[in-house]
Image (cartoon, rainbow, N blue to C red; front, side):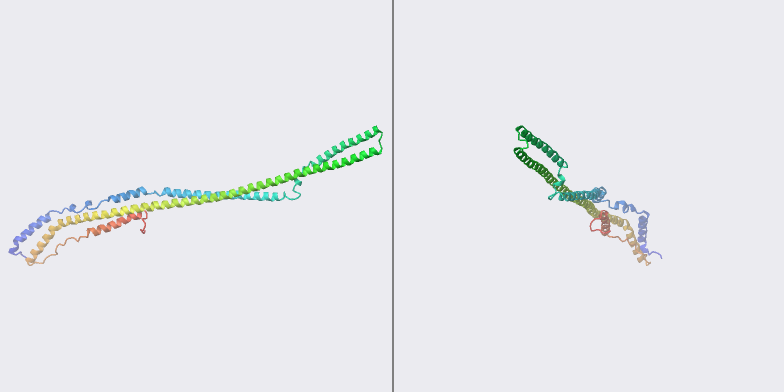
Length: 334
């Protein structure tokens, strides 16, 4: 279809503008490339540094907790030997108590009597009899000298002498028996007292061993409690670090998202400006076609733009959530 005369100048103008517009390539570098991608926010950098420096920071507490548990197990293991020792002391005390029970009563002294006592008594009495025999001979010798040998005076003197000798001999024997009994009884009493002291000492050792076992058990419980505390510190260290990293990361991601929204808006503005002449030419051409009675082609439509803010915020929330999950930030779910 020929172009009407009144549109000839407009058609030439349109052709000239189209040639000028389409002969020059669009510089896409003006609205594409890394310059339109928001860089890492300083808070994100800090979060990453905190996360890197905090890796394994809980291990000293965990090691201390393991050592405390090991010490507690060792301490409890020593209770067996202490219990055996305590049973030995208790058995010894029982044996002493049983032995002391046989050291009382009327015959307790007998086992402490000297085995040589009767020999001493016999020797002493024999010497006594010999000396008294000499005295009897002296009376008889005096009776011979005085001419009274065999007389009544001699008989009276010998009778009195023999009676005194018998009394003295009995008294001497009784004295030695009493002395032996007294000494044996003292030994029995002293031995009973000694057995009592030994029993008290043995019972004291048993009580001390029992107290030591209680102290040992208390130490084991304290060591186990220390292990639990160290484990709690390990968990607190990890969760606290996670909270810090998560907070820094999420705030940094929010600021990064805002920066990205601004860059995306600038990118869209630059891209719109680059394609704007083609839109005008398209509308210009459509108008000329309509005036000439032809069928208009499809009108140029610019690319539909996505809201920079909504896109950036969605990205920021997604990236920010990752920081919270690094160390199990409280409230996040896997």
